[in-house]
Length: 291
Image 1 (cartoon, rainbow, N blue to C red):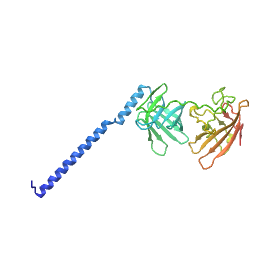
Image 2: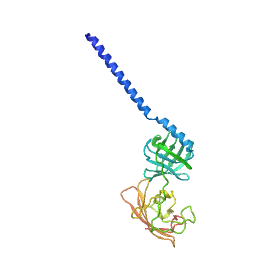
Image 3: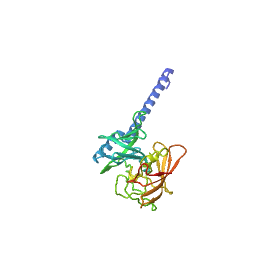
């Protein structure tokens, strides 16, 4: 069929327009099919809220909040370790940060890490862990996979629920000391030193002028086990680390000798040997020797 030049141009343009409309329609169909294949985030969040509400989990009762990608493996959790005390753990259960609880409402738990000036909101309504360090507006940090309340739990998208950790057994060479741990008068006082309790002491200045708490500043299941050479390690949130190693114990005299290696975040470290008689898990200021 013969068409004038102008007619051929109109014919080509018409066919191009029809082809573009067909491709656009196919794209819309693909997008729609993909949207139907996965539940909308809002709907998934609503299902999670309803399921946890049925299990009695809300902002006023939550004691464990797991975070990670939706439908994926757990990346860590926030867990209550005592009255008003919380810890953030990694996927291996190791403690990253510790917090104090500042308040709760129907949907959220609010936490504060004073050492970093960081505020955390565990928002079970939006399914977000929200982060605020004061330098920028509050922002989402993690997706909340599931939550647990004392006496009940619910699991969303098969996210693994953290199991309670068993307290580490002290090495056979370690013996109990006379007295009782901090806050538990009369209980056996062990040499299971917690380096986290000692990390805030002024090791480079005048450590003999302050009380040294040896135990009881956090839940026993959070205290690391000693390594092959008997050292326990704690990473300080402000930078650096502290390690402890028990040298000797005299249960009859209630005497303990231990080494401390302190690093404030620089390239060097400082080692001290402490000797003293703890009273309910505390070495009183001026009552112990530091070498």
